Image (cartoon, rainbow, N blue to C red):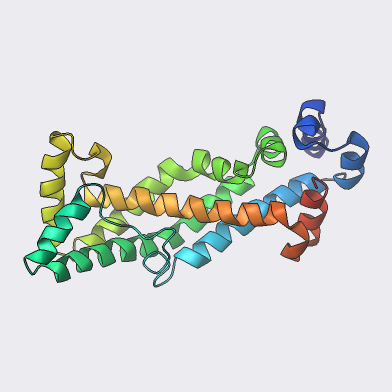
Length: 231
């Protein structure tokens, strides 16, 4: 019964208009639970790919798309520190921030895959007929809050090893009070946790766009069938 409701929702007139495909084509391509299987496969592929890319040495530090820098005006403050011979300490902090993110990301796998398992009919319909970032939106809405809780102690443990992290919090706290820095960035642990999640969802989004752009290139029969039908 759930399968029929799922497929029926996906093939509704509104959903088909959004993706610009004919009802006959969609029904023949997405029958017998193929839609649900294909969407779950895309979700799992996006999650696992992002974790594999980011949850390793230099996953963040060596990737300019997600590398975590010092926020806002603290970049300028870092230049002053370097000018006074404290450049090594600044680099140690930036490295520690990125290493903390790399250590935290693998812990996301269980929650991401649990979200896939609990996907509703409405979630599936939105993902299939939505835009290029609907998978990313799904994971963000379902997992950002619990992952923040899970990441924070890991990030805290990693950043506390660097003495400059305490100075960061002291300086950033004053800067936030003066309106020079966003309050959410005033604590290094919370800042890194947020940036780690931003990077995770960004890479999931990149995998999603690859699937939608070239489903044949995924090598997956179910992804070819489901996302190929939207071409």
